[in-house]
Image 1 (cartoon, rainbow, N blue to C red):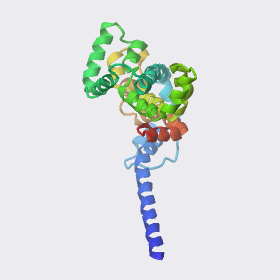
Image 2 (cartoon, rainbow, N blue to C red; image 1 turned 60 degrees about the vertical axis):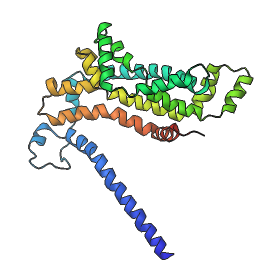
Image 3 (tube, rainbow, N blue to C red; image 1 turned 45 degrees about the vertical axis):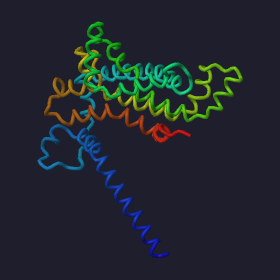
Image 4 (cartoon, rainbow, N blue to C red; image 1 turned 60 degrees about the horizontal axis):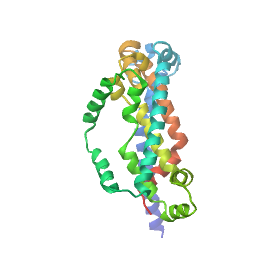
Amino acid sequence: MNVEKKNSRVGRFLIYLFLVIWAVVVLFPFYWMILTSLKSFAAYNSEYIPRFWTPNPTLENYVSAFTTVPLGRYFLNTLIFTVATTGLMMLVIVPAAFAFARLEFLGKNALFAFFLSLMMIPTELVIITNYVTIVNWNMRNTYLGLILPSVTSIFYIYLLKENFESIPDELYNAAKVDGTSDLKYLMKVMIPIAQPTIVTIVILKVIECWNSYVWPRLITYDPNYYLVSNGIQQIRENGFGRENTPAMMAAVVVISVPLIVLFLIFRKKIMAGVSRGGIKG
């Protein structure tokens, strides 16, 4: 027994040691980013050997992040883009997932298989097609041009469909006997039960929109429609200059904070949604 307990303790110690080392590896870039943002430009350039702390932290870089370039405008554009895109996407994928999970219609399986096959198309081809379409519709430098290509997702429809199918059929049959409409059943039963998965999809879409770079870069050339991801490039090229790394890090910290806070608030629902997303029964 003593040998087994000793081996168990050694095993737990090694696991915890590995987790601590891995946490340090993962979190160190964030620490370095925040540390650099708190250093003055002169202090940063005077460090021939990088220091893991700063004796005189300053917030001047954060002030520069909002005064040198219109970072507040970039935030507002990103917020509009993220909220509108996520909201419209949920209006599309929830009914679609419900239809594939619960309704019976001719060619349902074939249609769903066709949708899944669309996921095999390279992203580059989709971007080219969307770009030509948006340009032909004269939607460059507009919110609609930014939003429309991202209002649906085959993967999220699949993920939500699998979750809807895990809900017992008896609930649906009982609701139909009581005369409940499909829309009411979806709103009152399926969405509350699938809430962890729905929250996970919303969070993942928000992160995707917030970090979007290639499409906004292609479709906008007017700074009034830049998102924060494009704003970082604008800051680097025309704002602080390439040599002012502390100011750049301050802007990156400001842009990253909303996503970090969002994850910390909803981390339990995200984990629950991911664990349930592909499980049926």
